[in-house]
Image (cartoon, rainbow, N blue to C red; front, side):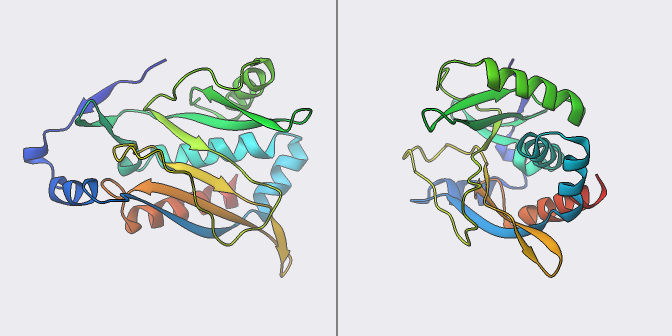
Length: 209
């Protein structure tokens, strides 16, 4: 299901110059890796016996949707601002050790998201169901290693502005559970200050869930 969007009038948009400068860069996307304290979050999902992965996808999507800069995209040469962004995540088939990409509409509550996402991930037979929509956040967790840096494949399409979120294997430090987490964004729309807002919002969510 597609989402509604607003076409941006670049002549009146405060970010127009910044957008064009980065849009013309050889590599307009950049990736930031940081750590999240998931101590409380992990206790919560374990106590309620719900999916860690799907719960975190919901948390990140909820927080990112609340930051306008994460909802901008290039669409048919224009700049648009979506009302809401959905999700697309990798889901591993343990028998083949191949992943499939599952598209799930964002839901209003954690419980409803987990219900819809779990059912769709289980029932989907194809590895790929077609090109990803423009109005998604992409997730590709790598829970087998606690990394300090990650890079991604590059399609060569400079207007591909879909944010990509990853995380690695969590570990213990000073009695806390620490998760390496990464976000890749298009610099035409998202600056460091906006990633900072996401980090603060997401950590607050994880602390209070």
